[in-house]
Image 1 (cartoon, rainbow, N blue to C red):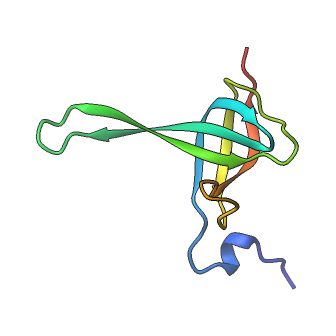
Image 2 (cartoon, one colour):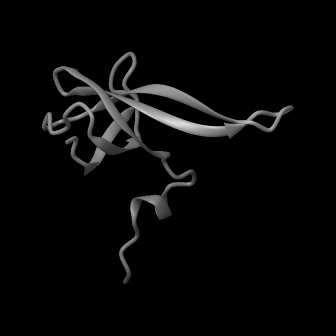
Length: 92
């Protein structure tokens, strides 16, 4: 029998985002800035909208400036609703 992945068994797949680590000052928590490009509804100009996500980082692995992939999860604290999946690119 084939193994089923987590995304296949869930009715709604968990959101995955990529962003840049802004802050690592907390223990096991990082702040990730996710930037989205959206078109203005009337003028059509491309805008950059960014959002800060509080992310659980169990091993304190990420450093400021790293590009990371995060996944939505259950509420872990008042503000934390994301967890670190992987570090895509280290800061130079």
